[in-house]
Length: 359
Image (tube, rainbow, N blue to C red; front, side):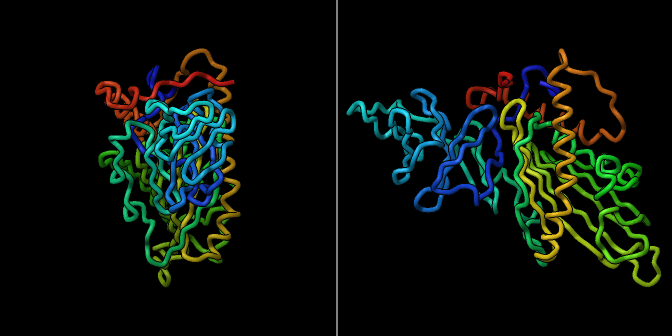
C-alpha cells in the first residue's frame, strides 16, 4: 500500500499508542489497531487489559459489554472473557472449552500513553519503548500535558511523512508557527538504529506570526524532531535572542517539547495523539489554544491527500525533492522492518497484511 511496497501496510511487532491513560476506565473503550478492534479497560487493581474488540462467537463489539470483576461479558449472547482473553462463562452451556478465547494484547502505560503491542505477544519487550530521557519527558523545569486525540481519515504514513519533513511549516502553517526559514534552512540528519533525528537551526530570523513573545528584535530558533519508528515523534522548539544581539544574545525566550504518537488504526484511518511540554502551566494553556490551528491544518492535508489517493488507480508517481530525504529514510526504515518480519515469519500470523478497503 502506498507509499510502501504492494502488500505492505505496517510493522506488527511493535508498540503503538491506543489511548491516553485517562481514557481507560471501568467503561470499556473500543479502539482499532492494524485493522483489528481492541477493547481496553481498567482492571480492579488499576492495571489495563486489552483484548480483541469483537466477540469470537458472533463478532459483536465487546466494548459495549459490561465488566464483572476483571472479566468482560458480551451483551449479545452473554459469553464472558477474562482479562487474558480466556472465556470463563457461557450461559447456554455448562462446559467452557479451553480453546474458547479472545485474543489478548500486551499493554504498558508509560506516562499518559497506553501502549499496545500489535504482534506476537512472546516478543513484546517494554525496553523497546523510548526512555523518558531519550524523549526529554522528565526535564527539570518542564511540565507536560496530553493535548489532543484525533481520528484521522487517512493512512498513517501520510502523517509520518508530514512530521518527518518540517519544511512544510513555511507554507501550510505560514499564518501561525511557520516561517520561510523553515524551508530554506538546511537540517542536520542522523540515524541510530530505529531512531531518525533532524535538527534545524535558524539564525537571525523574525518571530513566527502567531508568537506571543514580547520581543521586538531578531531571534535564533532551533527546531528538532526525533522519530522513533514506527510511530512516535518527539521534538523541541527553542527561541533565543539572536546571537547577533550584543547585549542579550543567546537569552532563552521560549522552550517547548512536542510529542506526536501516530497509530495505524485501519488501512485508511489513523489515531493521532498530541502532547506538549512547556516551562509553566500557563504556557501550556496558551499553547493548547495556539496549536489547534496548525494541528487541524496537518490533519486536513493528510485527509485531502488520502481523498486523492483513494480514487487513483494504482500507486502514484512522485517527484522527490532534496528536502524529502528524512521522510524517504523514514519510509525505508519502516519498509525494512516490515520486510524482516515477512522474511522471518515471526509476527503473529506473519507481518501485518494490507487490510481490506473499507467503505
